[in-house]
Length: 364
Image 1: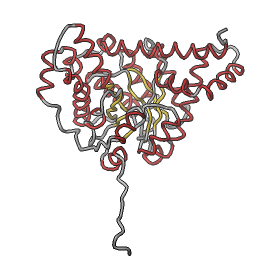
Image 2 (image 1 turned 90 degrees about the vertical axis):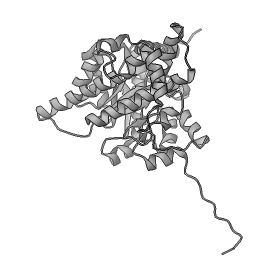
Image 3 (image 1 turned 180 degrees about the horizontal axis):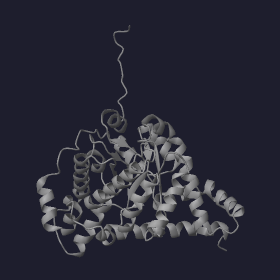
Image 4 (image 1 turned 180 degrees about the vertical axis):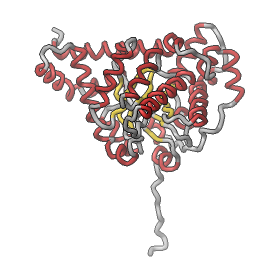
């Protein structure tokens, strides 16, 4: 052996290191197959999606999806622009789901899930949400279906679980919404058991869109002309996520918390160590690795009590989001983050319609 030779070791990237050391699992916040394949290399074992993300994935690859939309239009000559757009979303989801099948098999169905979101235009119709969720769940064995945590959505979640659908609760920003959704999942599972229906690993998750909660609180405070240390708002979503996770563990819910809507790296780093899911967009994953941001076990470390007390005192909207009884189920529908997000999802649907329209009827 050459005594002057040096031994070099390759340091494990932070994301891979975290998933190897902690029960916290990584999902990718997109069904884009290219991004998902790279995220799987980082250790991802699932993927989330929503209308905004699906629109971005389709428009980013119009060289692929444009001809496919044209072919679908020829195959289904009476289909509306919306129907054709959703057929593409379904195909995109099925392709991505195939990439996650190994993780699905290895985890017994707890992970390896590809999320498909119900049409936001159905948000007022529980029966329609359930019917679409059942249909989506049959696209692939490892599909998990997103239903919003609205008053209508909570009813739909229970019924969809009863009918065998794995659920990813979405349009959810608060501790009260997370608890109500988890309870709905429990009721659906209990009804299945009471009726002797087959038991299996559903892998259901309850999302808290922490960054969207932060966004809403900032907008609300600005409108109310409330001034506090702006850095406090960056902790609001983290605080809600940590509190919800603690309640889930304490009560033994059979679903997990999922952190989504990233606005800062703490929506990943502050949740490591817990049995939950973090689902950053791929660009956030890349930045975490590029900055060599090492994970520590932080899930049980509380947010600075001074920050929490400041938010509780000065920002009543935070109290509504943070306290388990801060919102009634009926108030889920009018909570600011809910309204803003549903509108954005509906607008993404409209934009997808326009993409299809421009392919079928190119502008002159």
